[in-house]
Image 1 (cartoon, rainbow, N blue to C red):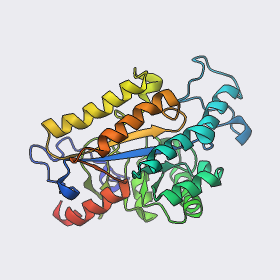
Image 2 (cartoon, rainbow, N blue to C red; image 1 turned 90 degrees about the vertical axis):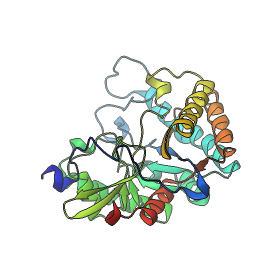
Image 3 (cartoon, rainbow, N blue to C red; image 1 turned 180 degrees about the horizontal axis):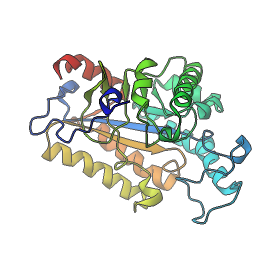
Image 4 (cartoon, rainbow, N blue to C red; image 1 turned 120 degrees about the vertical axis):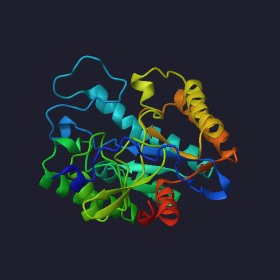
Length: 302
């Protein structure tokens, strides 16, 4: 498969000096999308038949644990048992929209969380059958995993996911498989602050870029230590766009087992209140950004 066939031709130009006016609703200057990564229960774990337990993005030991890591398992379970519900309360009490990047097997293990997501009206994008690297999967395996993930998420939420985000590294086949499976957009890109269209062979795919920079993983490995640090970081990112740039889109990734702890979540609560009070901010779901872009910036006009 060539890069062009896969929709993976490298483009270092993008929109250049004259990006399009997104025409965000109500004259907003920046579209802000919060994403809860629902992964707990989909990670590698010895009880699920894996040789080792997943310890990435936890508060666990720096030394590798051979076999079953009970500490890491417990930290993942915190995200599902406690962290998710704190984030759910924060967004629903403020009546603010949110997107969920869902590992299918994680949702399948928590029917109550699935119901809460459905009742809140949050949009759900596929994030894998389990928390795995698609770049390491054979094409036929990847196709089957995406099919199963789509089926499970649809069953858990009641509607099928429109978007997809792989765990960090998609494969060269991912975008083709997603188009074949009927996905209307993917977020497997970190290269822009506006949506854009790509050619995948003869087809067009909408890309809604994601970000690991404005992400709560910085609590685990890149220097943010307090909720106040997080609030300052998010506020400064949005204010920079408002003050310095043409209209943009910013994605803020959350993890139940990371920012769901109270000392960190308090900073998120302050950020939500600040953003909700700013008339230049459109707080929205990812699926709504995709629909807006298709309406005002069709692939034919790109």
